Amino acid sequence: MVCFAAVTYVSAVLLSHCYRSPAAPGGPDLPSSEGDKTRRNYTYMGAVRALLGRKHTYVCGSLQYLYLYGIGVAYTITTATCLGAIKKANCYHDHGRGAARCTSDDREQHLFMLLFGVAQLVLSFIPNFHSMAWLSVVAAVMSFTYSGIGLGLGLSKTIGDGVIRGSVAGVPMHTPMQKMWRVSQAIGDIAFAYPYSIVLLEIQDTLRSSPPEGDTLRKGNVIAMLATTFFYLCVGCFGYAAFGDAAPGNLLTGFGFYEPYWLVDFANACIVLHILGGYQFFSQQIFTVWDRWLEARFPESAFVCRTYAVRLVPGLPRYGLNLQRVCFRTAYVASTTALAVVFPYFNEVLGLLGALIFWPLIIYLPVEMYCVQRRVRAWTPTWVALQAFNVACFAVGTFAFVGCVQGVVQKRLAS
Picture 1 (cartoon, helix red, strand yellow):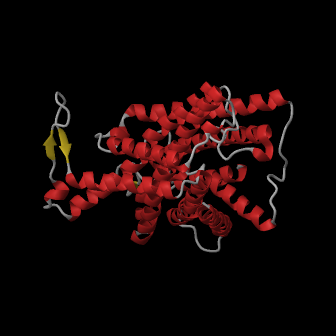
Picture 2 (cartoon, one colour):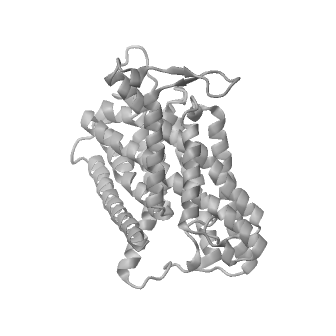
């Protein structure tokens, strides 16, 4: 965890130097003055396009949108798991832990996924839903709330039991190969927790130019990495100390905790509220790019460009209905729901997404852009250090990706 935090910080520092291209006189972080031939790169993909060219942009865009799509699948799985946990916690409270009537099956989980899909389909057609100011506030509050509850429950159980369970070696496996796969999947899960670099330039674009936005952002990076890593470590370590090798993959849904049931219910409800908006935050980026591409490609098509004013609810303003958007967004939500039904494996899917983007988006592209931006020549000490960093992270990312693919396939074959 600490190593990934350090790697993410280095990547963020490299990427922050690429906000302006080419470098302004005196350094890349100095505000542009009149006459400086510099341009701002407002997005990650914009920086890739400006510094590395079209081919790298295609690779970057494909991976970014695949990752955003995968988050939709992961969020669908997570919501179904949380809703099932709420139902089971209440059943345990009423009928006792382990009661036969409290068992759930795949059909119940599939029903929760379908309900979430219907909710997301409705939200997908609310204009500018993803850009509403309150959405970010709600997401932040919900995130801190359920994380704090998980941390508090783990700490209280550890103190209450008076025993620190688990071991430094972790969960024992029957064979070294099984242990290796589990380690690789854990690395993928950790990588998923540090996707910060993908949105770093968008954050940097919101900062003022004086003092230089790069300096401000790097100070913020230190604080963000320290706070995030400290919180991750506390939740993970206290959870493992409380349950040892029996610790579930998700402390709030795996029923490591089931009392006080109302607090567990509240924490899972916070997760669901966070995800309802989070799904739209990521998916709307895909919707926007798709809509703009089609409108540029088929400007005369009524199916693509024409909007029909439809009154869906009496008394409310008419809704602008676009047939292309109805078809694409319905297919998009349906496909993420279908994949979640086929591969309902929480930890494995998260690990696969984290491993997928770790090396290409978090390491390789920032390193390459930095070398172009700062004109780092081959075989200089800086170049050698960056390439060694690049190769080492490639090995780790490949190891995690292979292990996560193995985990998903194994779970699917066993089901």
